[in-house]
Length: 248
Length: 261
Image (cartoon, rainbow over all chains, first blue to last red; front, top):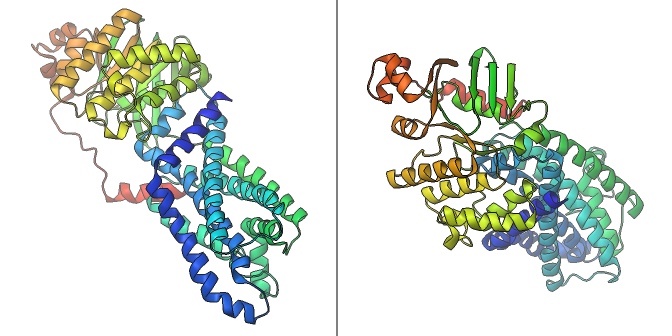
C-alpha cells in the first residue's frame, strides 16, 4: 500500500509542479467551450435543442479528463526516456503495485484538471440542473479518469518512443473524443455512427455526466455506470498485463 | 556472492552473451571490462532481473534472479549506465521514494538518507529539484540512493561516463569507503582502465560475449606481458573499433518493434 501511495503522490507532485502545463492544458477545452459554445449556440437553439453551453459543458469536461488521463499514461514514455522507469522496475515490488500507483495518480490529476474546467464552465454560464447532481457528476468524472488512465498505461507500455504517440493521438484519442457525443446529441444519428458511438466508452462517460449535471441522458444512468465500471475493470486488467511485460 | 555459470543470451541470431562463467566473492570489488557491444550491459541486466537469460545459471547471494526476482532485487543496488532519477523531484524526494520502494522503515529511511546525502556532499541541496543538478551531482545522488537500502551487492554500469576527473576521483573514493565500511560487494563496468586498475580487486575481460581473461590487475598484466592495464586490455581485445551505432535497417526495426511486442 505504501508503494502505491508513494507513486500516486509522485504523480500528483509532478502535476502540481508543472504549472505552465496545467494552464496550457486548459487552453483546448476553453476553446471548445467558448468557440463552439457561443458559435454553435444559435444554430443549436434554432434546432430546438436548448442552450448549447448547457449541453456542451459536460462534453468539454469529459474531453479534458480523456486527454489528461491518456497523457498521464503516456508519461510512462517520458519515464522510459529519462530513465526513472528502470528505477521502479528493479525495485523489489510487484509490478501491479507500481502500475496501480501510477494509474491512480494519473486518474487523480485528470480529475483535478476536469474539476478546473468544470469551474471554468460555471464561470462561462453553465448551470447544473440541481446541485446534488454534481456529486454524481464527480463519480462519473472519476470513472472516466480511471478508464482512460488505464488505457494510457496500456498505450504507454506498448509504445517504445515518442514517434508512435502522434499516431495514437490521431487514430485513437481524437476519434474517442469526436465519436463520444461530447459535442452533439447521440439521437437520430446515421446508423453507422450510432454503432460506433455505442462502442466508444467515453460516450457513456459523457452521457452519465450529462445525466448528473443537466438531467439529460441517452443511455440511462444505470447503463452508463455499468458500462464504465466494466470497461475500467477490463482496461485495468489489460494495463496491468501490459505493464508487467515491459522489458527495459 | 555472485555466481554465474555458462550464461547465454541471444537476441534473434546474435549471441550477445555466449557462455559466460565467473564468481564474485563477498566484499570484493569486481570490474567487468570490455569494448562496446561486448555484452557487459546485457550481463548486468540479466544479473539484475531486467532480462531473462536464454540459458545458464545465476545465483545472487544464493538466489536465482529469474526465479525469485523480488527477493533478489532486495539484495542489490544498481546505478544504471544512463540516469534514472526523477528530474522533477528533489534529491530528498528521490531518496525517500527509493526507500519506500525498497521497504526501508520510515525512521531508518530518514536517518540513512541524511547520512548518505551528507557523505556524498548533497545534503545542502536536498530540497533542490534534480533537474538543476550537474552531471556529477546526479551521479552522486544515484550512488547514494543505491546504498539507501543497505544492499549486499552494488552494480555500477559505467558510473563515471561523462564526469570530470574530480567527480570521478571523488566517486571512487566514496565507493571504496562504503566497500570498506559496509562490506558491500561491488560489480562495476567502466571504459577507464586506470579506474579499474585503481579500485578493482579482480577483473574479468569480456569480448564478443565471451570472457577472454580473468584475474587481478597484476595477473592480467603479467599474462599479456604489458605494464599497464590499458595495454593488457588492448592486447586481449585487439585494436579494431567496435561500431555500436544503429544503421538505417536497425532504426527501421526499432520502429517496427514499437508496434509489435
